[in-house]
Length: 196
Image (cartoon, rainbow, N blue to C red; front, side, top):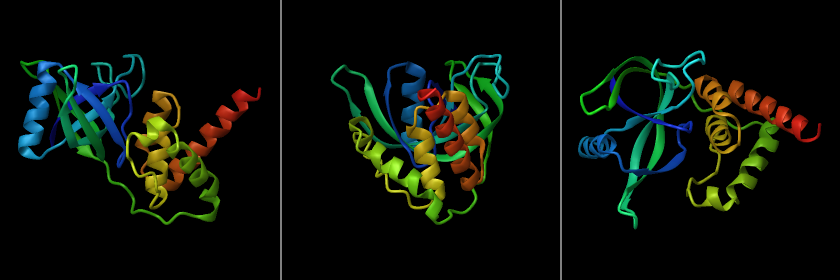
């Protein structure tokens, strides 16, 4: 499967919403093609070249498909688009086209079936509800109701202020329970730092 890549300083997760402003010609063309074909593009996080699991071009080898849900011309003349995270993928090979757009051969990563929320998820559900009240999160209109462990894990991993590397590690986990456990461990670490 071939997918145009859009390297960003963020990690997109399935089901999550991201607003972007597009101004470079190669990405305007890419968005135009995606909209004509009803296709998505791949969001990969920009990293330093020295990290493990990074393409030679300096971004993560795991990413998330972005599906365009809305677009409008901004007051500043730029194209504003809203995307929703689709499937996760792993970059196998990349090729830079003549217009400098990077296109990758990707392998889709399978998600385990959605699992119902458990009693022990209560604290994380409460945290998501609290995050949902933040104006920046509200503006995304993400509908921060967790429908199960996968959606809870994706939304928390996306919204919480973890490092990009931690977010990439979370994105690579197939099992929603493992992802929730890892989020809890990162939160414990953050709390430890706050109260140290």
